[in-house]
Image (cartoon, rainbow, N blue to C red; front, side):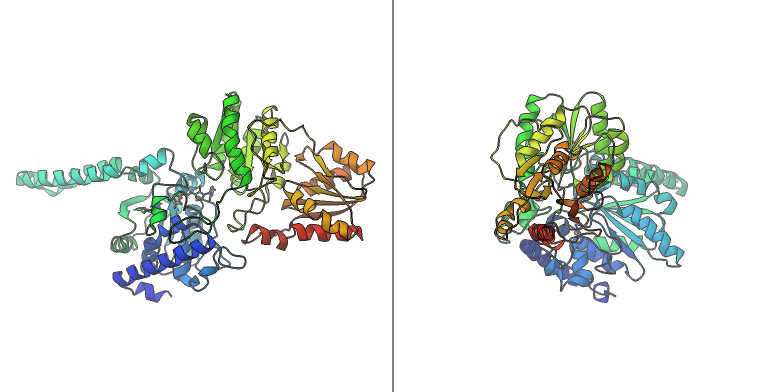
Length: 616
Ligand SMILES: Cc1ncc(C[n+]2csc(CCOP(=O)(O)OP(=O)(O)O)c2C)c(N)n1
């Protein structure tokens, strides 16, 4: 398998690297994608495919946003132009897509644990292959990676961990670990020290050049090497540390991997790569090209700004809010740009904590801040908040601490697909006591929700989608939302009520004229508070003699806002004909947000169909 790569010369591999880069750049220019990370691993991928045999060996990518070359070079070159489109190639490794994708990813920090498990299973079956985990310096800051490393001594035989170190996470690099990794100068210092010792030995009288003396000096040198390079950290975990080596030098990569292949010990190979390698605009601005929408290949200019109305409004609002309230601080887990913190970080850097890719830590750290009187806002994407579930339960909610979770990308996110859709947060947060949950439908409402949260003494979760709400003009001071109240958006003389959650109002309001033409009327109530549910909703149901109810939300139906309303109706012994529009009990693939909404029953079409069914 992949014989052509295994038999190729260095020159042929270099040509293949250039060709692969072309495909990656071209496809990302058209479809968008994680360009800079994937350009950084082209040579590493080729070297791995040359040295290892994927019949016996396995490669596990961490996050998987750097695995485009792997996809192209294994078995998906012909389909790669469909990257991130509905029905096309996924932007992340996916077991159902190819036998070469041995472990699905999208979230960071999983590769070492998965590689250890895969190796144990392979060897239990009688295999003798190597399992290679490739993990970035950013993903290495995840607690899960450390838990995996801590097991390397026990289960890490025949596992090769490759640290793909490009000195960057998405924005910058943060934390003590990244300072360890950047001890490059000390690598030179070590080389210098070795030369000096060699010279010294050469000039010693023959008596001092005996084998034992040389052995003692070699050992002293080895231990000083550990002190001078990042190796000591990994050696403490039981790895043999090798490196750092140049991750774009195919010859050096291949020779090193060939050397390491027969070594069964747990090894950590430290490889330096450049994010965006081979495409000038991405090399110059790896932060922008980390994950990017379609762009003009010639200039590197994105066709559309990737702005998200909610995130941007929030990003503008926070500096004003923070100046008004000294207690506030913000926490991000390696995503200041994506969560709208760039401006605040510029203006009030001491009030923004970037804790690295460590969502559980981010939430517990916030709980600590809140315990001593600060008012922390934790800004996370919904799908990454999943990592922090127990921190929310055990550290925040159980102690009723006033931590505000600002949950971005709540709902379908589009092209990043199943690993990134934020469609479980309502379900898993709703079951936690002390939690208040708000889904604002507009940008100003998001600010009003934060203002409300800051007037309360308990935990708040505020979830909002990727995209825009009403797109309202910016206002630097917004009144707190009233507590536990929604809003009647449209009042019709009808026994049908549509309850919308977040931007579900777009569909409900948008379909009014069309359905009116068909003679169908319905009222619309924006729920706003998922927990506690607004009492007003049940008053409306009673007063207006509502018989039929549609609830639309971008969350799994299971445990979502609709299910919360049904629970409450049941508690009150009220029976209504209901249609719950939310995501079905399956993982939703990648595609545009608009097409996914229609295909999976949370778009305007599904809404109109549900209203028609009820009107019959
Ligand atoms: C658990 C989790 N949190 C956050 C993210 C978002 N994210 C994707 S890549 C990335 C940075 C990864 O840095 P690194 O591992 O160094 O890879 P690089 O992009 O630099 O190649 C982050 C924070 C994620 N995928 N998973």
